[in-house]
Image (cartoon, rainbow, N blue to C red; front, side, top):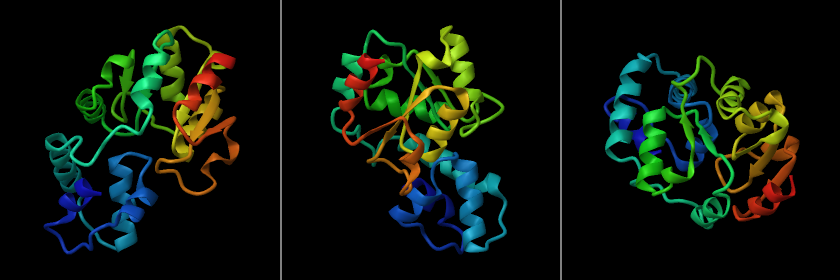
Length: 193
């Protein structure tokens, strides 16, 4: 929300609320800005907004971000499993957030919207990471808080875990194989598979 509002602040565009940001989030910054401009009926060059958004985010990667409760402990418990972040954020921003939150050491791979030619909900990023891990889809889980995560996992042939306390819109978890309301619940799911 803060990065978006910074990006649009010099223009005659009404600021976004937290709820509105949640509704626009999930497909990456470019799609977020496209949807916002369409919603506000503003004709503006997106590249200008993206530059301002990225600049702000780079300077403030975790100013308003914390790890959800139980995430560091759960990742430590799952240290024997290979893990990747497949984000629709730019890879550099994802890396900065993980490093600032002291979570980067838990991941073998971090990808972003700029890593592959397609982004979630396309299965391509998931399949490419699985190739890098020499893993089959049926050996993997995708864990996410949006419909884009669940659709990407389904299309790639992995099991899917919906995390209900993130940015997901109501009903996004309907097609997930598992639903968790607390991150440590992931440990039992992983160990059962």
